[in-house]
Image (tube, rainbow, N blue to C red):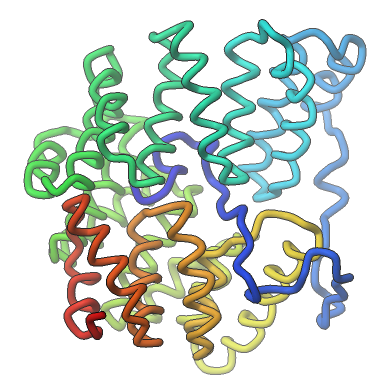
Length: 385
């Protein structure tokens, strides 16, 4: 799976570890250079007619699991829809007292695992989900979330078991798509493509299947088929930034910067989209977007928020700062190992001619069986340790 957002909508934000030297220290006070830079949109945090009754119910009895879960769920949904990660923190704060109880319910722990994965505390999130699934093996949401986390971390064998359980337990399309990702990660790319070629996308789940099939086709070298699948996936899930970024990346890699920029032109773009806009922007439009992205990353560090290491590496590499790009990409790959993470590490390692990092990638590919024509071309050009 290229991005958690495609598998379970609440898994949409990334990067919670700091690359040494990549950004300003968290304790430094950050003052944006641009007077128009938005530090926080206070209006978005004001309770509206949807949130107000949930807040009141929770405040009336903060020990009531049902009220806390309803409020946390609303916060997470809003974090996704408005691209405001601070709502994840609010959800975590609401749930924390409940999950510390000896017999906390499944729903609070499952949502808390979502907050943990947002901060990329994958081990803690997986451990919490392990407990839920021991008590209730039929909890589809928890199994789906655990499979997603395992795929992001490159634990393809672990994910395969969860995916198979989903496919055999009534979640046929999601389970088969998940299983195809796990198979492809473990070296069976052709078989994985065969699985998805024979599945007709179902309404409501088409975006995930088509996005995964697009990624597998891209890894196999079928650029035309990959872009067609990404476009279809985006049409099915137009709010999914991970699909939008994947399509833009595929277009840009083929020299179609104008088309990529058009895909990225959305209201309230996330950092992942802003960085990519800077890379493919037409003449005169790049510098302002680079500045905005750099200030965004600096603000995350100054506030002690999650750092988007993948985007930090992309931005640094596009600006020619290969050493900084490698630091960010290396730290990022230690925590998540999706296709974009692999490629940016390979590009940064090749740009710096870092034999140790290139060897690390070769060893991981050999150990997992993971195939990607782009990464393989980069490695073929790079030095060997």
